[in-house]
Amino acid sequence: MSNNTKSNARANISRRRVLKSTLAGAAVLATPAYLRPAWAQGKRVVVVNFGGKMGDVKRKAFYDPFTQDTGIEVVTVSPPELAKLKLMVEQGAVEWDLVDLIPAWFGSAKQQGLIQEVDDSIVNRVDALPAAKDPFACGGSLYAGGIGYPTDRLQGVQPKNWAQFWDVENHPGRRGLRTRVSDTLEIALMADGVAPADVYPCDIERAFKALDRIKPHVSHWIDSTAQTVSLIQSNETDYTFTFTTRVKGMQESGVPMGYSFEQNLMGMVYTAVPTGAPNSDGAMRLLSYIMDPERQVEMANGSGDAPTYISSLEKVDPAVRKWLPDVANENNMMVDGDWWAANIDELGPRMKEWLLT
Image (cartoon, rainbow, N blue to C red):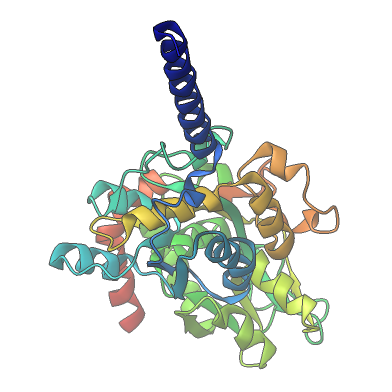
């Protein structure tokens, strides 16, 4: 073989190797981040969410398929608590890898350094709604909360807005409200005649005076979201502040329960990685999965929460759309997480003290 022939053969082999390497690299880059083998270490990811119907839907739409695709186990606990998150981070003993946060908690968690920045090289959310792309969290769904009531008793007197909820003479029945200050202050102000668009900044003293008036008529101050519907189901109370996802689940189970779409409180459910999370890498992979537009369609169909992609919203089952938050309705309002970030540390303890008096 001549020297030229040998040189050409070596060049051909070299080109084949380069081409093979390039194609292999391209295949890796084309694979979603959460499926790349270097990151699928078989570790577990601990997720804290609000449980209930929404927890079941997330398990089916996100967690189980993620485990099947990556081999990473997803362990869920509930409910999330801002105070517990803060304590774990401060003590350097974080047990959670992902945490779901309501707007009132999210702003405070970000401000206090309790959550870490989202790795956008892993989490693809380019086409999501702007509010879902905060540097420190992903907005995985949009929720709505309002008045839940029984449909097998007290017909014709069930309150449908917060002024009626406070009107115990014309709308008799046992009331249930949440122990947490967020949502409760906004509800009290609307009950007192404040228009949803004018709730923020909250008139704190006016809100507590309104709460003073309803307090003797509240049969249950509710800690757990699950109790907002279970107490109605068991006939221990009649009307509560609850969420569309909870009532939708009850109706699907044959429980006679209704929901008012008037004066709803709406907000983003943020999912974030705590500072010092044991498996932040795996958590980012799962976040990428949660922000997949097709997975969000499945989540919306199962829960009644809205997805955070316009393209996903258009694919939601028409039969489910009545449950989706109606952001265009001026009688509804969005929870202001920034206002709560500046006020929750003061108002949380005040609410607890007020409940004891």
